[in-house]
Image (cartoon, rainbow, N blue to C red; front, side):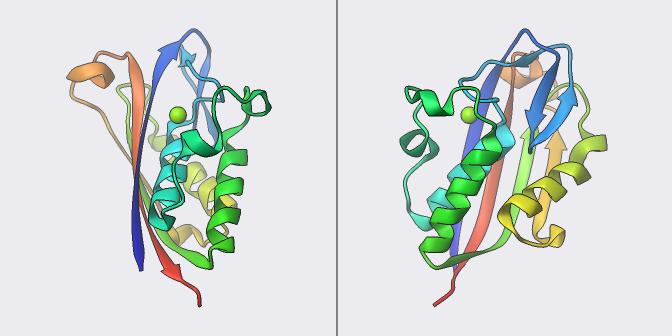
Length: 158
Ligand code: MG
């Protein structure tokens, strides 16, 4: 068994939605990012890469590479899952915590779990998405951005 941990932050910019866990969440702002700024999928990628000791998201998808400009983060997850599989590792479970002051994302959590399960090819029971505010404290609390933490467990398949 191998555990992995990932963390990501994006600051808010003008826009009308956030991408979180591959799900479009309407908001009075967007995420400032080279890609679609999906902190959930970015933290997930880093957790998976971390568990497999395969580097980090910045190494594999550099923001200097035009092929990833405005890329949907689902592409990152698919690529990382292929790398994990080629390393003969299987995903046991993933657990995400999103830090966001507003909007409330409770109505979108099941859709995020379904999307992540689909991308990782695991049952939805293997995927947890939790949300919390930052109680008005820090950059999340001031409504300056969004953050996500992710842990995952991988198992050796051979
Ligand atoms: Mg990111």
